[in-house]
Image (cartoon, rainbow, N blue to C red; front, side, top):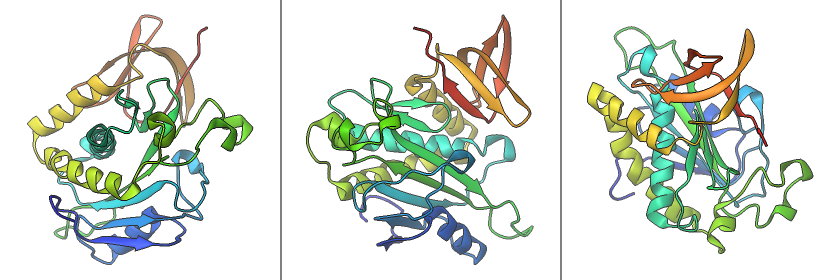
Length: 261
């Protein structure tokens, strides 16, 4: 593809998981920048093993293999870079009804009314041999492009909770144009990971785009959960939650927006 360093784009009619495929390729020595795109995934991955099924060819399902030169404390910003690139791409194409998408910390893209449009999942292979290529991180993203066409197409439990770009735009959206725009935007976003100033810029942009700030949230961690008000995004891109007057920094975890009305 022109205007983007991501030229090795591998396409699949159907695959179990584009993330799984690229993790296997990375273990075989594949370089940074390989992209896998599928019309359908039979075992697409989400956080905590969740799955999302959509009609074949209706959504953008892709993963990218990266080998970022970042330490463990900054590896979460790889997810941020991909999420921001997706927001950039939707902005560039203008299919969100004139209003920009928002980011639910750390990895969901939301419509202006709060419905989920996309999810991002990063998986790292930390077993890279010393002296070899940087440890690979595979980041997958699934964007609801042309499905659902309306809320009535969704399972009952998802109505009002999920949306597609088609719904927001009021017309079908070109998946190929969206893929191209995303890869164009992803170049500078991933370049930013290489420097402290670039990583700070990613955190700043996340702060400006974040729908979680100011919301009452429940944070679910492996050893328990807590509820508070999301009050800040740190310079490192972490979430600060005010719990009864005490700030707690969340580096990773499931963050659920709690309705207060």
